[in-house]
Image (cartoon, rainbow, N blue to C red):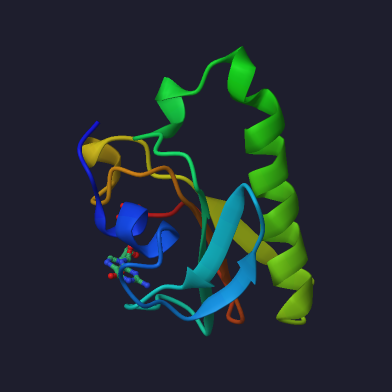
Length: 112
Ligand code: 5GP
């Protein structure tokens, strides 16, 4: 499993503006925000992308979604979008599973 920027953030080797941290997950602000709130939720465990998750990861994936909901609430958001880019063709650039939490402006549909 190759290391990534997010692996380094998870281990505290690179700085990030953390908004949540627990034994399984972290949430931190995206360095290049696409909305007034743009937070990334990641597992500590190095899973490259969502499609690598198996039923054994169900509890972890559920926890990541709960963390995403919690940070959105912390940000005062009622309406927000969760995005997971799975694979380069879908826009994934960092191969450590992450959920984007986007909000604070009207969000168009469909996304690009
Ligand atoms: P992806 O394109 O893989 O779905 O999303 C990767 C996200 O990570 C991008 O929105 C990008 O701005 C963000 N990002 C890349 N490098 C860093 C970093 O070093 N720190 C933080 N906080 N965000 C990063």
